[in-house]
Image (tube, rainbow over all chains, first blue to last red; front, side, top):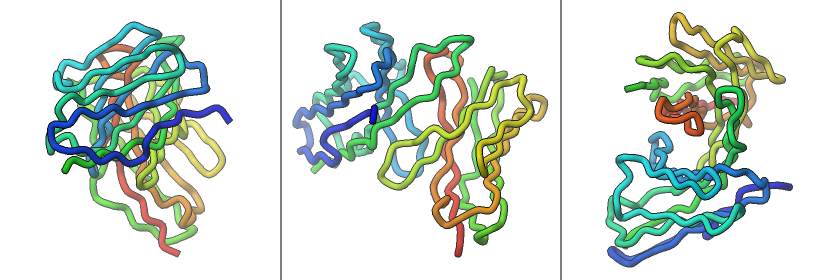
Length: 116
Length: 113
């Protein structure tokens, strides 16, 4: 089945130690998203790509960066994780919206990041 | 800026009853609204989309309504089952770009056998 796969499911890192989370998709969607979700909160958009066109949210910390080397893969880099960055990180994809934008998003099961 | 409100309190209902969840929004006139289901430790799963010119949308036991005057969507699950227990999120297109949506915080539904 076509899907969005995130690795690893659980990641533990030390305070200040860089970490990379990965996402791959077999849906061939041209839009990919990274969200941060903390307990009992809404998923918060960090970045999204339309193909290779990168779009950063205004309130995404500089500590967070992203790469999309090709259609299938996308990476989230956290340069110096702080305790406040402990969260679930969700990757999602969608087709480029048509007709005013109404495409559903397809999510992976996330990577839960813990900071020691 | 746009604001989305979902009842943050958990909704507990008896198996077999109809569950009704609410999504209210302000400062916005969205062209559509989406509903997702999220299980603990999993990513959200898309359920239904309703457009502004549609009053109601159905899919099996699910029904969504969209009242653009009240700025409200209702999400109904009829003949609810314990397997329907999850958090349900509504999402509206983000005013900052039509490739994006903004999610509500979700309402946790617990169906009691």
